[in-house]
Length: 361
Image (cartoon, rainbow, N blue to C red):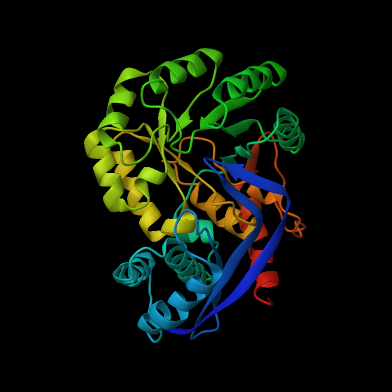
């Protein structure tokens, strides 16, 4: 039973090909992440990334490093791990440190990865995933119609066939743009992310209109705090609703399930690691809900971790594990996208190669 002997962090910056904008004023110009490395007594190591998203979680590169090095790591060093449940139990201790979602998520994933390496297992084998092909979607930034079409065109050329379009800044113009996208890419599917920006009085009518156009889902139409309104919206419209910001944690998911506010859960391993993500996925499956795995604007490393978790059979929708295509990083380790999917075996191989390269940073 190997013990945890070392936990390190390193700053990890990745340029983007273009800025990402969403919601009411959010903007991402480059990726400012933190690499988290865990080493066990037998020399096995795991590496994961924590994305600093101050406008979402309040975390920065500085706070992530501090909370891990001064609070989370001291509670784990010297502890032994012998399986998924043991890692999950240790990771749960991090819940005493409130919020700090991506710091705790990265540490959890690095721990699981290290134990998989210690056992001589592929991460997919260790996690018990069985889906051989991972269907992908691509996140489309807000912006001018020309910029949006260029983004979709590039992703389509890379093999993507499902797209998430950000809306909420200029609805009439965005509806017109979506109509053009659907007409221009008849083999593709489109869903929207409103990032809590829609008007409560008009949301049901708007989602009905989008559904008639062929849009398949809507993510977080209304502000999270409007719980009763979100429940009513789901009752009033036929558009399947995706929960994201409303269900950061298992406890928040319990609330959303009790109030019947959503149809699909967007699980983000970047903020809930593998341990809590599995608990959330199990609760969704038991409640008859669909699930997808999202990206917190991850680099290739984060996308590979998310894609492997998306291999669980209970993950039923396309997954946002392609954000690495928007970065200027070295993608020589990236697995090929074939017919809009990643092969799980290719993701495992890519992660093994990438882990070796990233451990040198």
